[in-house]
Image (tube, rainbow, N blue to C red; front, side, top):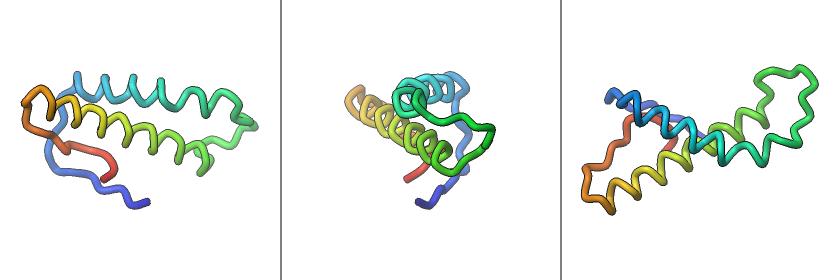
Length: 77
């Protein structure tokens, strides 16, 4: 999975919303994770990156439905 960082700055409030949404989506998959001290394990990072991408896509759909311009300020696409 390629990660492409956009050059546009992102609103801090939007970052918080994406973080909260991603945490909620990742929590069920991480609750049974074997935390054996391997910080930054690839599987754990993959779960978090996938959740962040999903949160960003959800916000884009909300923006579209509300008639706001779509912002691809950061994340995976």
